[in-house]
Image (cartoon, rainbow, N blue to C red; front, side, top):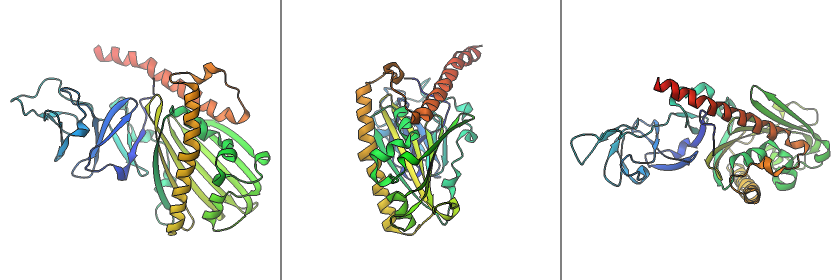
Length: 351
């Protein structure tokens, strides 16, 4: 399985990285996450250099991670700093340390060349930096499917009218204007639904019932697996600032070729102190993802089979498939460019 490695991937919600050791498989690689005593996050290969035992089964001693099998200790840079079985540190005892970035409520990991880990390459998701006047909530699920199938699902929101009752906008199927824009490797898939019955999710956030208005859903994809969704509604002909806005992050990190970490976050600008509404949004969103999207995508993966290129099955393409197709082509080009550059980098290093 080839992945785009020189990129930022979500590894965990910030609140989930603590002084307790957390194991994650990311791009087929075992990783252990923890926080140093000063609160900064760290990530190491979850594999001791001695007999490859999971370090996540060990313990922290200050900022040093001790293997639970034979007691070797590693600092947060992956250096072996203590060998209880002799006076010297064995040669090549170090392990990999991963660059991390804390932003937008998540810990992001860079699985590629550490020298290229530039924070400026993380997509701008600044709406999730908003403070007072906005409510943010998070969730996670693991999906037993290739991450590109989930990207397909998110970039083609025509499935909402058939799969997600709480997100459905009444009377909009034949009255939707769909535009797909590709700019600098970013794919935008925007759907405009004028004069429709606004979805239960938006009307609940808006504090209204059975609203007729103009609804929108605008999805933005950044390679390899970061998607920003803006949904909202206004009175017919109204301005977005005068209506209701609910935005989502969908962060897809491959675990393996057939398993994906799916992190999400939601932010809204209405009734931000309404705990009952917050709980309802959490339950509704989790139900949509876990009980509606997840079973369908996993069944799709089972039908396709592991390691099968979906294009080899000659799928029928419909008009809503334009955005997913663009994203697949962009990602394939980026992976191929990275793969082609790797031999040159290795040759330069040997020289």
